Image (cartoon, rainbow, N blue to C red; front, side, top):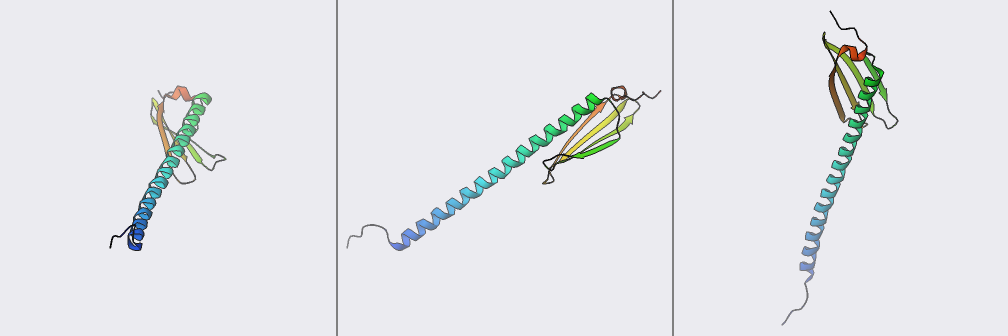
Length: 119
């Protein structure tokens, strides 16, 4: 007897294989979307930290510590610590709602921050 078409078992096996392939592709897509969101958040946090550093440069005043929050839920902290007679370390940390951190650190001369250099 010449058989034409697919049996029910062949159709079910093909459907299971197709379903597994679709699930793998959806997982790959969702992982890519999560990575993209984390990347975008890092760009935003870094830009905010750079803006805070620009504020420090424009203010030209020494503040040991300053904190704040933005409307998007991110929290930032700026700390200044004299590390030597000739240098002040500035740490800027910006944390988003998910707890991801962007941290910038730089050095400035005391006179750039309105401090008198130590003799």
